[in-house]
Image (tube, rainbow, N blue to C red; front, side, top):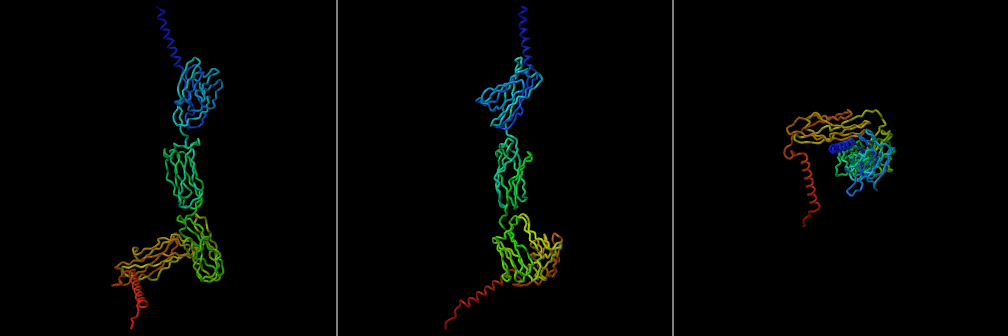
Length: 508
């Protein structure tokens, strides 16, 4: 009877002992790294830590498999620490088993020397590796490791489609692709990019955040406006990466204006003068078109041309005309006996710069003169137009020359243009429209003042005579009056012509 009681107690103690032994076998297994890009080879380290068991002498790692039991990771080289061997199961490998040839991993110790070369799957996602550890008392412990397959972080951009040359004002398309550090297109790239350029006038793409639907590739367009060699740069500030484009040679656009150098040059008889014709496009790019332009001078000037070089003959002030693609410009050439050339050198600079004429006389302060009509007569309620000329006799250009008036109310006057640049040794005209109110009768003195950005100024006076307001037909505005005179003159010509040529005398 006592024996019957002892047997259940003994069995219970055995069960408790087994349970306690099993409970003390706890292991941690990790894989580093546990996340990397798809279709990429990585060397990973498997670490085993014995948290409370007898010596671990066996470690098994099962490779994740698809529904057909095909391994999703490709196992390459496998390394083993000293005192361990390994075996591989399957082809391709489905399980790796390490077996200790010595005492194994003691309680409280770790081993980090299980190295494996793994090629990740072609599909992104999370994958579970099953593992089992066995101690020398035949106790086992199981668990799993989750590895993640995605895309490598963005590492660089590739820009394609950029031409080697372009025309100022013409846009072109190009493509930007984002790549990860695995040298694969980062199809999940959603970074924000910005653009900058060496051309401060360029029309650049706005900042853009890539969409998932872009799959890491996006087309953009850009328009360069400044002639010369230009580039642009794409930058992802958050990722800390940028890429410069190839260099683009930007050529000037179609000419919209031309000019002749030198301007208003004074030379002696039988002297050779070399002229240059410069064109400018809509974006202020200046370029030399001398070889393609036609140059002529007043016939009375005589002399001869050899391409763009003119040999003077007759004394006088002559007009030189340049013609290029239906654009016309002119300048004066002053020929005098024994005159020393005032302008020694004409320098044509690069297309992106402006033209600079260097005077042979340095340090001479620019001198300005303003000329205006001595008198203008306007009836009350009428208006008239006068020309005011600003002359620059100095050796430096005058910038932003403005003409103002005093002596009459400002609302009587309109001046065109508001500002003008007056080059050295040249002049510019200003159109001044003066309106006299209907009830005004007192004559006045108009003072015109021209001033430049350099602080140079000049003045000129015009007497404004306000005549008696006409009556009858003469009260018509000036333009209508002129039109009436023309109509009367044409009618008179028609009548005279009829009498002389069309009307036949009557037969007697």
